[in-house]
Structures are given as structure tokens and as C-alpha cells.
Amino acid sequence: MTTTTTTAATAPVLAPVAAPAARRRRRSLAPGRRLPASRLIGPALLLALWAAASAAGRLDPGAVPAPWTVLRTAAHLWTDGTLTTDILTSLRRAGAGFAIGLTAGVVLALVSGLSRVGEALIDGSVQLNRAIPTLGLIPLFILWLGIGETFKIAIIAIVVYIPIYLNTHAALSGIDHRFVELAEVQGLSRLGFVRQIVIPGALPGFFVGLRLGVTGSWLGLVVLEQINATSGLGYLMFQAQNYGQSDVILVGLLVYGVFGLVSDSAVRIVERRVLSWRRTLSN
Image 1 (spheres, helix red, strand yellow):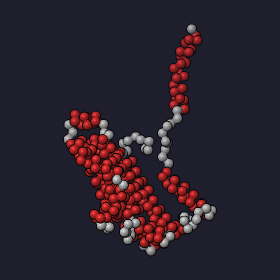
Image 2 (tube, helix red, strand yellow):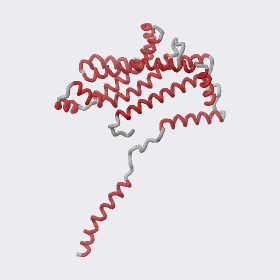
Image 3 (cartoon, helix red, strand yellow):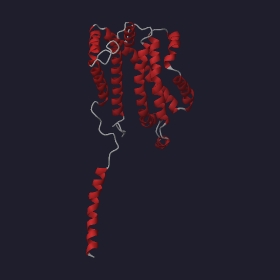
């Protein structure tokens, strides 16, 4: 009788002690805390390896100049105004093409995603456009629009609008139909449905397309500025190629890389703020 009473009395005391110990032993599967300036670690490591290889004489200075040589060249180009002018020209082209592509991608995705008639008229044409290499359209656009600024901006707009359309349209198509039924039961108007259901549901896909569009605008600009251009970073690199100036080419590539990294980081910051209500691995 005494043994039975002691076991029964001590059992409730041991259970709460074992539970926290089991929870402490459980390993978290999440990535963990975000490292400060984590996206700069990779580029900094590459820069350090580049500098170390150049200092050790492992790289041919004529083919791959040292980082300090590239920095001196960049400072010289900036001082004489060449780099400043080319950067402003490239930013103007990329900005104009990106604005047009962003507007077209969002509008077409909304019309196609919210209307069966719109989908029938738009989606097939966009899919066909996606299958055609965009840079392969350059000769045709030169015939249509000439060899000035217009065709360059038009090509950049096409490069931008396709990923924005595809990802936004996919996000719209993926909205759970139960939310549509709930909006109908609640008696939401068309505008209220778009504001409370469509926009929150499409934003994650839109931001994915936006990041791809930002990157695509810089990639297209590299090629376009080497076609009958008189200014711009691509033109600067093309001229440097003719004279064998690899340091100038690396300056242009580094500026493109910095612009791409900064613009992608800006989109990520806006995305985290706008979609702060989501619980994801990234936040």
C-alpha cells in the first residue's frame, strides 16, 4: 500500500520536468537569424580572392587587372566626367524601359487574370512572346523604330514586362476560390474584391516578377548600348574592347553589378515591408 501511494504521488511531479527537457532537445529546422549585411559577404569574398590572386601574380594584368587598377581607372573616368555621363544615360534608358514594362505587365496580368475573355485574348500572345528570344527582336525593332533611343527602350520594356506578367498572372490564378466565394457572401463590390482579395493574393508573385524584371532591364541594357550608341555604360565597354582596355570593361561590369545588387535589395526591402504580415523562412 505504501509503495503504490508513493508512485502515484510522484508521477505528476516528474511529467512537467521531462517536457521542457524534450523541447530543449528539439532541433529547429528554420534557417535561423538573418546575418547583418549577408548579401555583401559573397561579393566581399570574391573581391578578396581577386585581390589576393592579383597580389600573388596568379592573374594576367592584361586580361584581369588588379582591383586597385580598376579603382584608379574608375576614379579617372569619374573625374573627367565620362563615367558620370554614361551612368546617367544608362539610368535614363533603364528607367524609361522599366516603367513602361512594369505598367504593361501589371495591367495585362490583371486583365488576363480577372477575366476569361481577357485571358483568351492576352495570355496566348504573351506566352508566344516569351518563347521568342527578346534580343532576337532587335533587327525587326530597328526597322520599325529606327536605331535611336526608342527601340532600346522598347526592348527593355519587353524584357521587363514578361516576368512581371507571368508571375503576377500565376499568383492571381493561384488565389483560392474559397476567398472568391467569401467575398460574394460578404457582398463585396468589384473594387472591394480587388482591394481586399486580389491585391494581397497577387503581391507575392508580383514581387518575384519585379525582381526578375529589374535584373532583366540591366541585362538587356548591356547589349542594347553596344548597338549604334554614342553614350552609356555598354558603349563605354564596347569602345574599351576595341582598344583592349580590360580595366575599363571591368569598371563597366562592376557598375552594372552594383546597380543590379542595389535595385534588387531595394525591391527586397519594399517586399518585406509590404508583406510583413506573412510568416516565411526569410522573415
